[in-house]
Length: 298
Ligand SMILES: C[S@@+](CC[C@H](N)C(=O)[O-])C[C@H]1O[C@@H](n2cnc3c(N)ncnc32)[C@H](O)[C@@H]1O
Image (cartoon, rainbow, N blue to C red; front, side):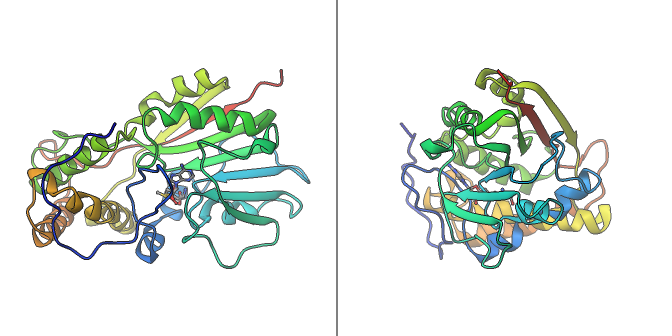
């Protein structure tokens, strides 16, 4: 049962959000979100590697990407594997799917919590990235069991998730603190597993995976961190802009009373990020983690 918010919705022009039955995914699915999704900056964090799972894709292997959105990871992988490797990207919303893609790629609407029954033991590799604002706490074990089911024995899963912003992390950044407080209220009201990264190794093992591994990298954010810091700032500001509609619809959680107030907090956050971090006023960014694990042969 979701805990409701009795405050009246705050007037604003809403962004387009998904309408998949039962989904609590909180980010929009529109052109601005498409432009925001950053594959290159995440790739650079890992020395331009997009595949950490030790899988050698061979001719006729099959790859699945879940929550593919515009399919950026899959399109990149397609450039480095044999064209007979077939890849399917699934998402609960088709609006971001690429209009042009190589013939060995396919895109379809599916939810990770209920993948097609005839996909058991099919894929050599399953990739899923950035569903921390999408899946509810009880949905993660279901999703990981589904992923396990569709991987062939000996195949690999690779997942990417950030550690989540928490209230009190940056007390000297008042705009960020207020936005993080609203962000936390939103994810709580939707029962989203925003801290899923912390529990991922355990959840993977409970789903049956072995050889669970993780590498974490700290992206920098803000002008002080150069070109990549600016790019990360744009992506992260996009998340806070992206959750504006659900926050204003919920009445602002007692933190803002108008869209203008929300937007000026966003402007303030950009200024806060651009200041070089100090011991008293640290950087706000959190680690990005890549997890990988294998389905046993027997
Ligand atoms: C933040 S975007 C990440 C897109 C892509 N993975 C990337 O890294 O660029 C999250 C995506 O997950 C999708 N999504 C949310 N809930 C889902 C579910 N239950 N099953 C499959 N996809 C889902 C959303 O529609 C959205 O496209």
